[in-house]
Image (tube, rainbow, N blue to C red):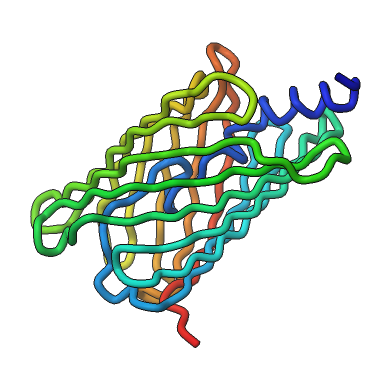
Length: 235
């Protein structure tokens, strides 16, 4: 393998928390199974900026909801490590289908399938893996909080499969303001993420600010996450 490819592969491995399997915002690695009843033939666009150690990442994720239970999302991420002078891109294409409505049953569950691609070291796009996940969401109390559980598997194009799992909690603490937290494990990678979401415009425009801590083994980095999401966009 050429030295440039080796360097790129190492960098992509270290930057995995920034460009790994995408989650439903405000989360980084957790998928929600809560169907939004008004998501019928509408678009949403979520943008995120992350800082983790010397690495930075920017992502944009447009999503189209065919109906409240079926959606397709594309997420493009640009990441760079200043200390290594390396950069790379990742693209995720996710299809999610939910099998029931949380408003009716008090819980929701479904299936998420995501194809992952990456580009780095001056090379072209290549498929990097396939991720499958079973998301489960439970409504707590009178709907003031949601508990999310994910279990899945990631099969890199080269390498052994890796099991993924996460648990996340979100709840409204004030008008238009929600606190959230998640813990996730993606193969050997561990992630902790906490923050706050504030709806600048109810159900239309949301601002997320959070802190993450991620890494492999004892090598952990702490960083910042800022997101801006636009929802219920119709044409």
